[in-house]
Length: 333
Length: 272
Image (cartoon, rainbow over all chains, first blue to last red; front, side):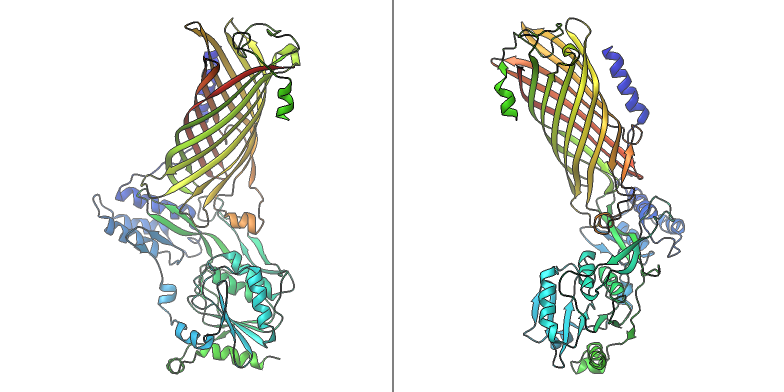
């Protein structure tokens, strides 16, 4: 009887089998195959970007030979990933990080920290990741350079109380490469009295390039704390990326908000992390987000008013974009 | 509550009664007494895990496990129905193949089972029944960004059986036991294939994240082989646990295979 029970249990386990994903060899070929498969099965923009991933494989696999050095393999794999043209795609090793940064390196920077410091002066306030001050013409200026830097509700409320006397505020998210989406939505929630539809998010439901869930709406809820009711200008540049792209997208659906400067850098796919057999880390866009009209914002959001930093102004210590925002806000009723 | 119950407990030596005895009821103390076996164990062992939501790589390392079990006779069917409460808590720390990243895993497992006891020979007994199986925990990948962890939350109704074999070694009782539990039908939390926890918990998109599971999507098996041996006034339990936890839900595959060697003490007593 005991033998029968053991036999039945063993048979059951054999029938249902082991649940496991086969690993690739830790060889140049194995690491190449592992990376290709991770992107093939998980990357979310292959269809949208019309990337023929099989053709990319055929192109790059010829370079992968046994005995390839780590440096050379890293370079080949990095170049293969660059075909995706995505700032959220990286390959991490101890000796280097492969990245695609053309989305801002190929464009004018439209930002100078030195110029920003001219406007902030020396007596500016710091609350969490925010630096802010009141300019001479009674316009509030807020610089936020990373959505990874915390902005708690108390910090935001204190800032808006301080800026309450201003006729309008400038929120400068130029050069803000992103961070936490929760900070982006928390900040945006200070600029609306109503629940606002700002976009959609979906995720892959399977390994196919077109296997996506039904897009679910993303709303910004009005904050329970102090909410700003006066005009706002958000400054963006090509280095406004990822969570900052999301913030700019949310802000353009808020009343009394104008986006000024340059197009954002994009980066609308929430990145996931994986790894190769040799331990190199891989980051890739996994969950696409869209704007409220279901348009892709992976390659950025255009400003309402395009303004570029002029070399002449810069030479005089003037930030053309901040000045344009001040003029715009001072003309607002 | 436990203290109140123990007020009625009567500590009895192993020679007078034996939870694994195949003798017919009533027990040595009397028909109104229920026999209890309570064991507390600690163990260390090897674990191997894979969770494709986190990584395609298999992580291997050590696992610490604690367990507390109470197995007791009830008054149902003339004492032939036994009840088991089994709690296990385990913590694992594992490395990837390249040994440049780690995962930490914790899982709490609670089983509440009922068994029909059927002696087959004078020293061999079978207990067969079912159990409610609750599990909660996580696997945390130290390097991942927006997919840093997998939440473990699942429950099932298990088929469970024990084989008890009483031996004598140098005139002292040696109680061997094998137990296996197999999830039959249950519910499991699992994100969708490429879904982020941000979408689930911050945006509230939880549809389809709790799925029914069967032996085909959750082919798991917990097995334990134990030996109880009295040394002086105490009874020592040595056990080997082979814990297979597997799932393939929402196209995400996960497994944890643990081999744990445990040691602990057994307390036998009777209560009214």
